[in-house]
Structure formats: structure tokens, C-alpha cells
Image (cartoon, rainbow, N blue to C red; front, side):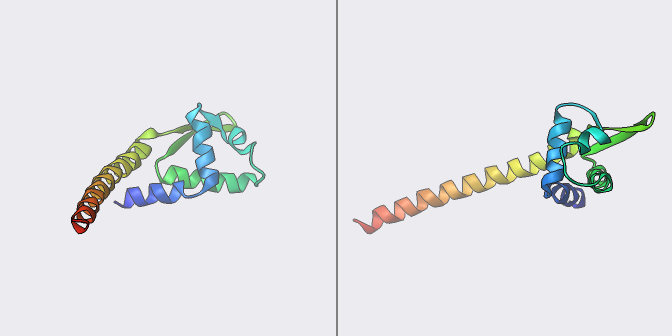
Length: 109
């Protein structure tokens, strides 16, 4: 469960989500990832560190650059958790809706 907490914490930041969206299109260097943002390179590096600690990305040295790529496994775990809870709450709310409609029908009799 701690891994899932780390994943959702990393996903809570819009800059990190934008970085993940960019990496979903393909690998990129740190400089390429930083380009669209009006924040410092050290700030981007901190965001990347959070994403790496959450196992959402991995990076490797490529000459003078660091190339990052998406690691979809952690996102898949988060998606599984969300899907389970979506199914659970949808079913629960559907049952509640049927119950309330049945009760409303009984009160009009």
C-alpha cells in the first residue's frame, strides 16, 4: 500500500503529470522535459526524482545527458486500484438508487 501512496503522491502534482504525459509519447532527455516549463532545471530534477522514487520513470546516462522513460507498471497498479473502487462504488450507488426508487414507490401506495 505504501507504493500506491507514493504513486498517488507523485501524481498529485500537475508538473509531474505533464512530464508523464510527455514521456507517454516517447523517451526524452531532462533538457527536453524541462523545455516547456518556466521553472529551474534543479526544480525539474526534483520532480524527476519524485517520479523515479515512485517507480513511474527511470533514467539513464547517455553521454552528457540523462534520458528518461516511462515505467508503466506503477501506473497500471494505480489504475487497477482506481478500477476496483470505481466498480465497487458504481455497484453500491446503483443498489442505493434502486433501493431509494423502490422506497419512493412504496410511499406513494
